[in-house]
Image (spheres, rainbow, N blue to C red):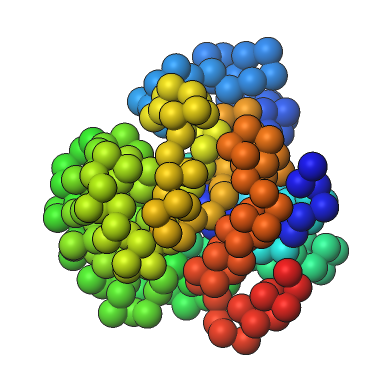
Length: 322
Ligand SMILES: Nc1ncnc2[nH]cnc12
Ligand SMILES: [Zn+2]
C-alpha cells in the first residue's frame, strides 16, 4: 500500500489530466462533437499519432480562463487527496491559442486553479511552459521567447513535448538557449519515441537538469552511466510507457535498472486518464509490480522535490514536509 506515502509529481500535461466526463461536459457546453475521441467513457487512440489527435480534441474543449481554472483545481484536488504535496504542470499556450485563448488568459486561468487548490489543500504547484515539437523549430523558438519575457511567479520552467520523431534536438537548441538565459528550469521530452541518441542529443545540446521519460537511454550503457554521473533526473512515467508500447510489459520496464545504475528517477503520470493511470496508481505500480520498497519510493519523491523548479525557500519547506 502506498496511499500513506507522501507524493510529488514533475511530469503531467494539464490537458492530458482532464477526466473523460469533464471533457464530455465541456464538449456539450461548446457544442463540440466528441465522437471518435471519447467512447464509453474513455479516450480513443491507438498509437502516438492518434493519441496527439485525441489530446488536441480534449484541449479544444477548454476555451476560457474559467475552464482552465476548473480543470486545474480538480486535478490538484485529486492529487492532494492522494497525499501529494507538490505538482508541476506542463502547460501548452499553443493549445489555448488554437481556440482563441490568449497565453495571458490561459496562464491566468491555470493560476486561479492552482491558487484555489493551494488554499483548500495546501498543495504547492508550478507551471512549465511547453513548446510543441511537431509545430516546428520556429514555433518552439517563438514560444521560448514568449516564456523568457513572460513573468509569473508560478511559471518556472520550459519543456519541449510532442512528436519526438520529427526533426533533431539540434533544430530546437536555439529555443533552449533563450530560456536558459532567462533563468527558467529546463526539461525536455527525449528517449520516449526515439532511442538513446535522442537523450544524448538532449544532454549535448540542451543541457537539461531533467529529462521527460529518458527511459530509452537504457539502450546505451555508457549513456546510462553519463546520466548517473551528471545527476540528470528522469521524469519516468511507467504507465504511459506501457500504454504507448515503449516497452511491451512491466517486466521489460527499465526503472529498476536505472535505479541500480545510480540514475536519479521520479514517478509521474504524464496524461493520466489517457493511459488509465493516476499518480497514486503509479506509486502502487512501483511498489506492487516493479517491487520497490517504501524507502526506495520515498527516495524518488525526495528526488522530485530536489529537482523541482522552485525557489530554495519553497524547496526547504517541501523537503521538511516529507
Ligand atoms: N507522452 C507524451 N510524449 C510527448 N508529448 C506529449 N504530450 C502529451 N503527452 C506526451
Ligand atoms: Zn509528457
